[in-house]
Image (cartoon, rainbow over the protein chains, first blue to last red):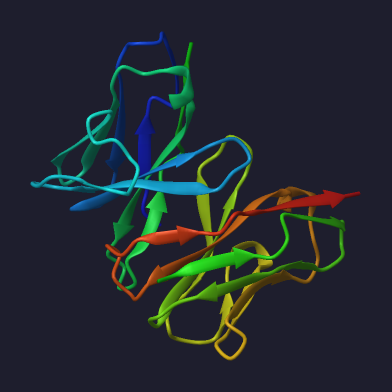
Amino acid sequence: GAVVSQHPSRVICKSGTSVKIECRSLDFQATTMFWYRQFPKQSLMLMATSNEGSKATYEQGVEKDKFLINHASLTLSTLTVTSAHPEDSSFYICSAPFMDGQETQYFGPGTRLLVL
Amino acid sequence: AQSVTQLDSHVSVSEGTPVLLRCNYSSSYSPSLFWYVQHPNKGLQLLLKYTSAATLVKGINGFEAEFKKSETSFHLTKPSAHMSDAAEYFCVVRRGLGGYNKLIFGAGTRLAVHP
């Protein structure tokens, strides 16, 4: 199957700093990628849809200025958490649809963010 | 609108016994349905998917699920549980076939397998 990677896998930062998370489709191109957030022992919540060559679309309640998304190429999307606060600590997961005729979404391994 | 309900937040079984994880969906359109598994601190792995073909879907690791439109259900089963099956399982609905349609996740079911 298709492979999606994320970097870093884990990051600890101080409150007020910004953190960038990368999502890459390793062996296929993805004009669209999705970013999710997962709190401990909870389900995944879709944050935004990243679109190559255009602006991301955000889900209701997600702050665009806080969670900056850039889809730089057909294999790379980045999520930047700006001015991070402890409440932003979470598990961030990306996914990309693979054109296998059924457009199955493949997920990255996730990035655990801890804001001190 | 699409939604998915996983009827059990926790399921506990003994090794070697059958597994049943229940999922009901709601969709205004013909849905695509998926089961994903998440092991601790790991990414999500696709177990199986239904996309309007055969209603009985076989997946990896001996899991299978049956799409029942009349019952709006997509329950996940396995004849014999292994210790390695202990994980969090998510039932997911997607509107239609397109990969660009959003995925809606259920709340998850934590499966515990006892020796």
